[in-house]
Length: 202
Image: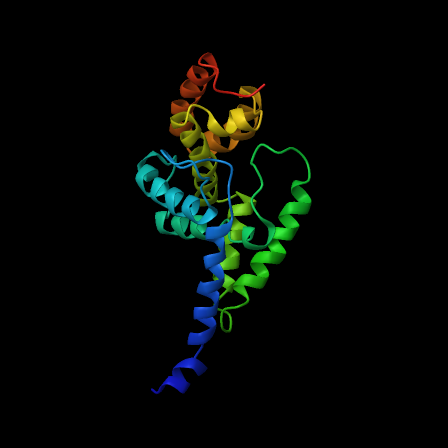
C-alpha cells in the first residue's frame, strides 16, 4: 500500500482529528495543578480522571466495564474545544451549554472517516445521560477530581471564585454518592474538615 492509498483509507482524517484534539490542551480550567501557579487544562483533567477511575474501579458499586469508563472520560470534555470550560458550580444556563457541547462534539467526531466517530459520540452521550453504571461511575470520578485538588490546594478555586461549602456539596454529593458511594463517604469528611479550616468562599 503506497502513501496515496494510505491517505485514501482515512489516515489524513484521523491525523486531522487528533490534531484538532490538541486544542483541548489550551482550554483552561479554574483549578491549579499541585505546586504550580498556572491553571490546569482540560486535557490534563481528562487524563487524570481516567487514571483515577482505573484506580478506584474496585470501589464501584457494581461490576462495570472499566475500559468503557476510561474511554468515556477521555471524550467527555472534548466539546470544550469549541465552548470552553464552565466552572462546575455555576448555576443556570446548563441546557444551552450542553446543546453547544453536543454541536461541538458532533463536529469534532465528524472529522473521522466514515462511521468511525459514531462510537465516540455514543460514549459522550452515555456520559451526559448518566444512566448506565459506567456513566454514573464516570460522573462520580469527574466530580471528585476538582474536589481532591482543592483539598490539596487549601481550597484554591473555591476561595478564588467564592464557592461555599453548601454549594460544593449541593453540586457534587448526589452524583458521587450514586456513582461511587465509598468515594463520597471519604470526601464528605474531608469537606467538613476543609470548612472548619476556612477553605471555602463566602
